[in-house]
Length: 111
Length: 114
Image (cartoon, rainbow over all chains, first blue to last red; front, side, top):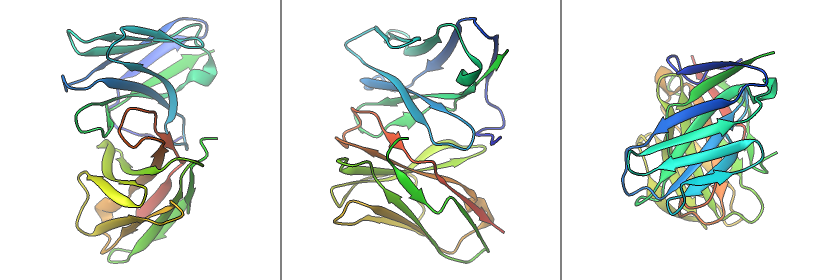
């Protein structure tokens, strides 16, 4: 499949485990954060978002945690499935209103 | 399916040539963003349009230009192509154009410059 980065951090998990993907952001003015999933050969797909007035948001099998003190964002995936294998990007936007993407983390789920 | 359509899916061309990439945004979205994704640079913002007007510019080369038409589709023009321009080019659309709502991405155009 396509690679989106030569030196992406990689997280390998077993099917059924919980996965945690981390992201550090740099702009203190950022007030909106999004997680995207990119599968091979496709564009990034929106998973979940969170605004800076929240520190936790849950979706279906996914939870995003925001720690503004240390400028850290995490994506938790419960009961990880082989179909979750992809590259995951966090994105932040704030003063410039243009979403800035992190470098991505490759999640590999072993059956 | 994000609702964003990009054509063509693949382009192979020679150095010095010019190409045009096309994007149709999701129905109802007024804002279009263009991003470049290469192996060593991740997703890099190029340019944003909102309702036909340029709203923001990123690290877009002078050899590159874009526009958004009255029907809201957008085109990215790449000229005097160099080997280093080989990359995936993504278009994304959003409703607000203010960075406070999710972007919806097309599946990209893979450009190969030989």
